[in-house]
Image (tube, rainbow, N blue to C red; front, side, top):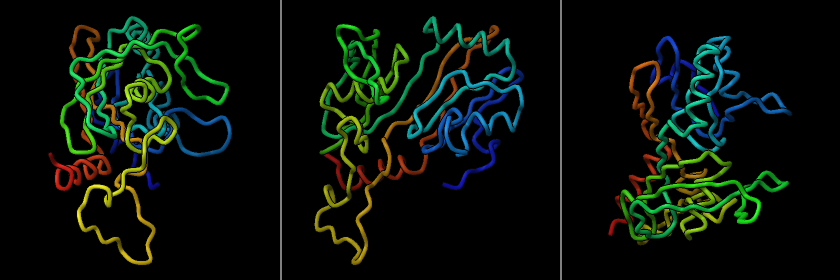
Length: 239
């Protein structure tokens, strides 16, 4: 993928913090192996003292907070630990669902393959609130509010509700093809059909918190791929 300049991803910046709208398909942290660019690398090129306050999965887009100095990094780390930062994600899920302030409270652990799994005996507490924003015939748009920060928490918590995120093949999601919702669909000849979105349809939409006497509610617009996916659903998969 072709990356923009780091400054073009910034949606908020002050003397303490930077907030970016992270693009999908770029890692938050530097990989141990390989020389692929990461948000950490780009941020430190922009400002040498930059430190990521948290991380997003490689496929997930949206709000990512970056401290500009060690003091702010410590403050934000404490806030994350004390659950004083409210995070809101949007996910497009396979199937029709009717969550309304539905809480999934299922302990999770991480397997040797680096995947999250339900583990009621030895897993760490994990809790997510879900509410459906918009329903279609075969999909729905869900607001997700994780109260803890476990690996792949939203993805596997939705999977436990038979509501896997579209495109999330690791946790049961299907690649969403236009032919499944558009009547009399005629695919282009001699071309492999492409899904309506080519990654897990999950976006970190906003964060809210207080810092140094100020209240923040920072939002990240949907990226083009999720916006187009929703546009197609509203056109061809409406109720």
